[in-house]
Image (cartoon, rainbow, N blue to C red; front, side):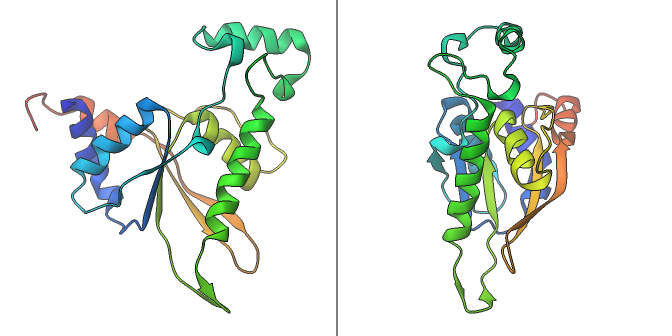
Length: 188
């Protein structure tokens, strides 16, 4: 946990916004990361609300196997991103979950007429989900690569008027991880 706390301190400067809501995937490793970050943050942050919408793609019968195994099966199927292993889901399904998640946030956005309240939402999720979120809202029609680093930070600006638009402000920022790796182990 020392490394996680060090990473949290490195990232804290980026978390100085008064977050009004926090969400995380309901999978254990992401909930654990969220708990460490929220507990160590310099500013008081709301408790994370776990959501199955934020999960990584379910590999079905390939769950727990090397990624190369599912990639080979997808290539052999000729279905590309539409490939859905038995008991799992396709990338299209993950994109649909990303769309549902953003729509639920937008639907819950308090506004009266043209007045809006500003919300700052912190989300802890997985690289595949981020990939599909970007593909759905930032670069529609593109199948972006899944190059999100573990614990990378992304910042999106979402405007809802006159229509929903999403822009990436920070993408795949993992400097806090590199800085934490360089910091002395004995720091708390």
